[in-house]
Amino acid sequence: MADERIIRYIEATERLRQGDYEVEVPVAPPDEVGQLGQALQALARELDARRAELQKLDLITARINAGLLLDDILDNVYDDFRALIPYNRIGFSLIDETGGTVTARWARSDQPEIHLKRGYSAPLAGSSLQRIIETGEPRIINDLLAYLQAKPESESTRLIVAEGMRSSLTCPLIVNGYPVGFMFFSSVRPGAYSDVHVDVFKRIARQLSIIVDKGYLVSELAARQATIEAKNQELVRLNELKNSFLGMAAHDLRNPLSSIQLIASVLRDKTFPISEDERTALLDDIVQQTHHMLALLDDLLDVSQIEAGKLELRCEALPMPEFVRRIVERHAQLATSKGTTVTLRHAESGTLYADPTRLRQVLDNLISNAVKYSPPGSTVWVDAHQQDGGWRLTVQDQGPGISPADRDKLFTDFARLSARPTGGEKSTGLGLAITRRVVEAHGGIIDVDSTPGQGATFWVWLPAQPPA
Image (tube, rainbow, N blue to C red; front, side, top):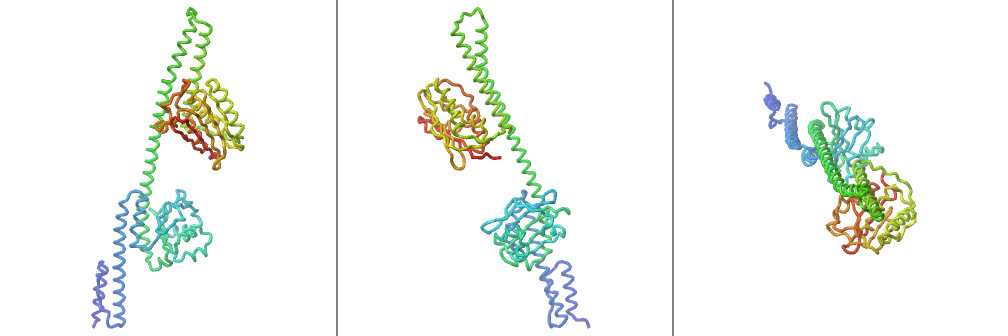
């Protein structure tokens, strides 16, 4: 007569096959048949736990998959996967298009500091990660300290050990047979991955591969769209700048050209009575008008050249006392007609590596502006001294100062200030904007210290060596 327990076992096996893991079978007496019952019951419990695990994974991946951008997806992985895998840190790396380099793209940890950061890269060929890609199998290291001792050349292991990690699980991410990257789970506890099922990790890796690849593609499209939008905005800005150039040129060139045309007509008309002194005055007026137009055209060309990214610095070692002194002496001569004194108060010995033409342009703009807005009989002081690994150049005047409203637009294109030149000089409104661009091209800073009614001190700081 057949043992009734065997019949129960057969029924339980059929229920297991149909996915019903809540089975109870007789296990006594503890003979060979009873031992079979115990094994069957243990299998049912393990299958039931595995089913719950996979159901949880499906729910988590469904929620994660609802994200669009890669960083959002990875943040969701970090928040939700604790129910399936023990970890204190998750890292994500991408394989480049050539398949030659692995680069860290994202990392998150509950530890105080992350050492293996975004941008860290290493060759794939010959590395332990290459073996993971070739086999498609997750890799478990339950003692990272021992692994580092055996492979002291592994810089990535050294970095995560420095973060406090003691065990790791590496899942390859493969989409349609093509490797795209890796997901790294790490724990501060040694042996954290000793009692885990590799097949669960395989399923996790498959799910993550598809999700992460989708997020990466969407993120790339979003980044490209943002780049295109930024370029469109830049084109709009450049178009507005072009229109401003044309408007500025039309406005500021029309009056001097009309004046020159009128004077030329007068001089050409031999019947028009005119003294030699009047003739000289008219010719002087033509010279002044042409100087103004040339200055405007030079400024417009400078701005357009800088905006087009064609400002090339030809830097050389400049002995600062001699360089600054020559510029100040020239402006001192020009300012005498206005009764203004331009003085080099202090020029420290030393060398600055800069473009002499462009640096002269900077000082010319600042000193000529100081003279232009200073009252007759006042003094403009120029200083040059070394500071914070570079040079600080200052131009101080005794003019009306800068109002808070003017300060915000000082270094912008076509700035029109409330203060007016004290000698009726003309301005293109571009000088300080060009000066700012030249200073920034040298890696420097320009600003002004001023109290309305008490003059202004424009200062420039330039590094001893400009950026490459």
